[in-house]
Image 1 (cartoon, rainbow, N blue to C red):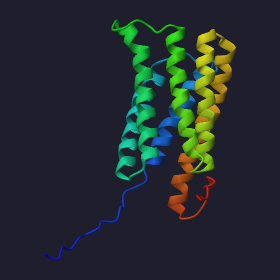
Image 2 (image 1 turned 30 degrees about the vertical axis):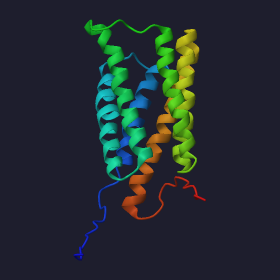
Image 3 (image 1 turned 135 degrees about the vertical axis):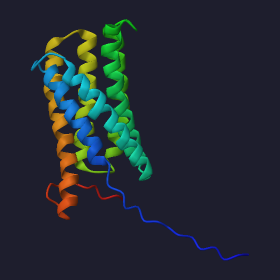
Length: 197
């Protein structure tokens, strides 16, 4: 049997998680300023949903796959496509390609994303506190929005908007903590790493 020499390459690629978290954070904050009554739904939110919220998160998810990170791959790719699907839900009816969803459709759409996020939140219990805050508040956000759409309660949607801003700020913190901690080679912004048993 021939002696075979194997070369194992060390993964020196950058951490894609901050990009994915930032894409989620910026788009979530902007949309929820709208939900809280700050301004109308316009091209700014739609453009953010397509680019930084959608495409950048999908790219981050693919890069997480390269890192062998199933959680990151699933989270970033799924939420990237969430943003793209949300933009399509908003623009397809205006382009004449579909009817606008009624309150039951939107409630079901948001509730399904809430259910998915609940299971992802359970996964964060093995990761870090920063992600637990992001996913925990995101579960609440999806269900508040779903109930708000189903009941057509505008006050509940406004409350959801403020809660969504908090969720986005948690994601922004988690993204910037990873960037700054890596740049400085020490903990500048703690994320509360969970000790795995």
